Image (cartoon, rainbow, N blue to C red):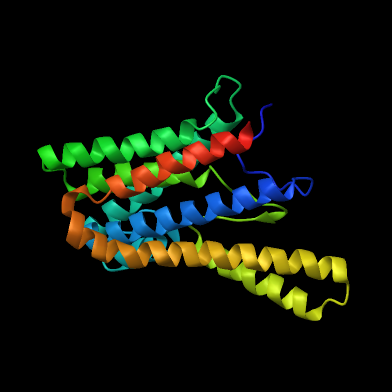
Length: 232
C-alpha cells in the first residue's frame, strides 16, 4: 500500500528532507491558525480546533442551545470526514498527483470565497465546507523527522513539547538529548506557526474582508511547489 504523503515517522530521512518537513509543518500550522481565527471571528466557531468545538457542543447540549449544537456537530463531522478522505487519498494507489491534497484544499477555499462573494452562504454550510478543507489539510504532514506533529492540534503540540523538554532535562544520554532537543524545536516552531496565523487573521480581515480565505489558498499553492520538489 502506498505511504501517506509526509505522515509516517521516519528516522532515516536526510537532514534536507526533515528541514522541508519542518517548513511545511510550520506553514500548514500558520494556515490552520489563520483559518481557525477567521472562522471564530466570522462564525463564532472553530474550523480546525475540534477540542474547543467539543467543549462548546457539550455545553450547548446541557443548556439546550440547539443552534450551537447543530453548528458544532456539523463542523466536527466535516472535519473528521476531511481527515478520513485526506488519509484515503494519501494511501490510494490511484493518486498519482504528488500534491493533490494541497490543490484540493486550496481549490475549496478559492471556490468558497468566490461563491460567498456572489451568494449569501449561511454559517452552517460555511463551517461545513471550511471544516472539511481543514480536515483534508490535517492529513498532509503528520511528522517531522522522528516526531509526530499535528498542525492544528495545539494541545497535543504543547503536550509533546513539554514532554520532550522534560526528557531532555532528565536524560544523560547525548544521543537521546539531541533527539529530544530537535523534537522540542520542531514542536515549538509548529506552535508558533499556529499562533502567528491566528494573530494575522484579525488584521487580514480588516484589509481583505470577504476575500480573506484567498490568502491561505495562495500559501497552500506555494507550499505544493516545495512539496513536489522535495518528493522528486
